[in-house]
Image 1: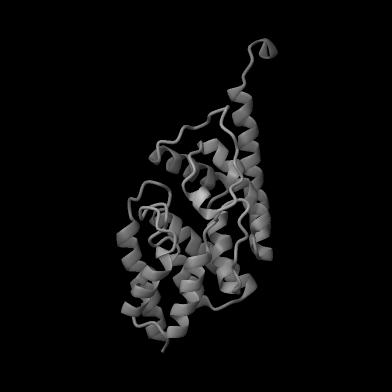
Image 2: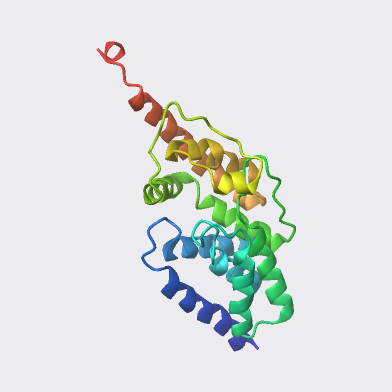
Length: 223
């Protein structure tokens, strides 16, 4: 049985790697592996079914709405197809699909649903990769890929109240910090995730303070 367990995770790892290598928006194979590794670390502290967590981490960005033309619930369906092809049990498929369907941030005012411990762990790992130094780098990679300006001082920060509004919003990369990334620290689920999030959150606030200082550089004040 154990060799079979090994093989489903390893096989899906190979399949996902081939699909996501070289992706340019920050949702690449390296992001998936960081989420996978952080998920396993959190699981080692918090518990939960490791196989479910590993598979959900590997599949969490499959057919994401940001890249499939805006279809908001495609990920779970594609996840199920892949797991069936690899002969996963119905129970495993149900648990992994639930996580993939519910992992995304859906807007500042949208209440997220994640009931399972496994889901909370993978969601924490995914959110941790959206904040901190790597989170900053990914924000600008994604913004550039989407032709978003770095910053528009006149642009309003919008706290979206529906997933549709959030998914289709035009914004700047700096506004994205206020519309999503700075909110994530308080939406981490597990004790371990919350501990990891503190430092990463501070890296972002320090960066934003410095960004605004440089943006508003005033010659008189600096003489």
